[in-house]
Image 1 (cartoon, rainbow, N blue to C red):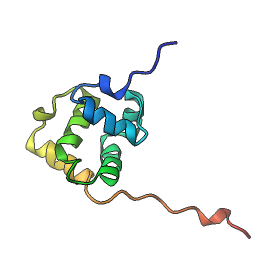
Image 2 (image 1 turned 180 degrees about the vertical axis):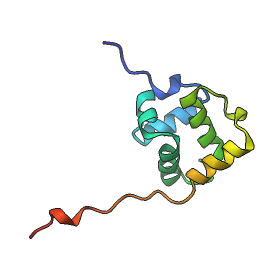
Image 3 (image 1 turned 120 degrees about the vertical axis):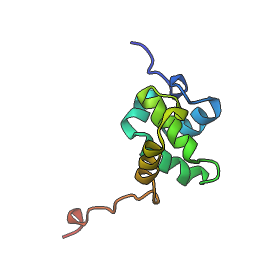
Image 4 (image 1 turned 90 degrees about the horizontal axis):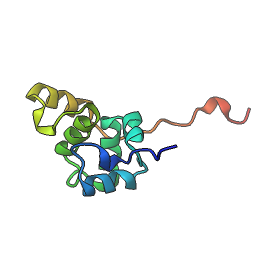
Length: 101
């Protein structure tokens, strides 16, 4: 059985980007596909800060997943991605229905 393709095999993602993505636990191209560009972007911003993880990173990951160069997105597509990725990373609260009772 072949090894799963690493994130560095995807277009638009260089060694630094791939290293950062792996550092947050997204090891393979399939992991990134499963998480999606928006969630991965939010996780990366949470871990590395907004100065290191900007909108170009979001466009690069989305492009990597759909086979497009990050510069090929229209202004409307970029705005929609920014909107989808706006806000902080939120993690749901534990379900209290399984508590002591």
